[in-house]
Length: 223
Image (cartoon, rainbow, N blue to C red; front, side, top):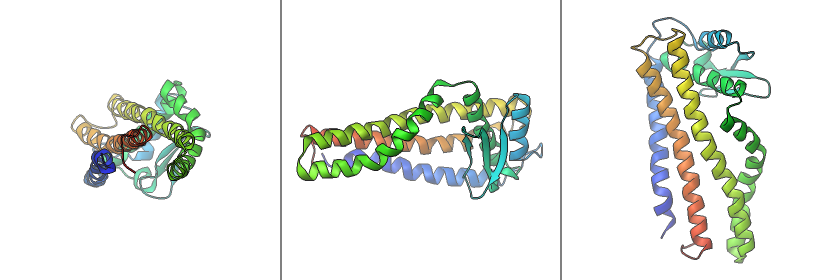
């Protein structure tokens, strides 16, 4: 079977996910919060009411939002920090959700943190090793490349539920703290669900590639 048979579903999902994220974020970026709170307000309010000892900072760029566990800092992009849109509130609450996972020692998040250094090495080394192994018909090198790439796949498999859990926490936190109205919750869920699609697409792509490498290794595929 050809490579495209394995990668096409993931490729199509990735294209759709990027389209969905862009359109959904843009749509709800134009819907203003009835409470008038900004992304920064949401992050600070949830942190304060949850007794979270974290910093909230603004960073340059769009959709560059993230939680830094080393410095215990939630960094919100310019399009989120000072915006009172439904999109901004959802993203801000999602990042604080990661901070809560960190505080609660959420198992999958801790595993993901431990996997980061080895994943960084594996993602850069696996393909060159696989390429050399296939070219030289050296099964030992091919297997080493597959093992290294398996770490990348594991990272994606761990990341997906971590992100979904953070989004679920975000929706609950926004509702429980009265930061959005009941009518606004579907919009928040749409934004976070669209973002989750990108992680699903990345996971599917990684798994598909691993299966293809294994198929070649066992002699059932074509290079």
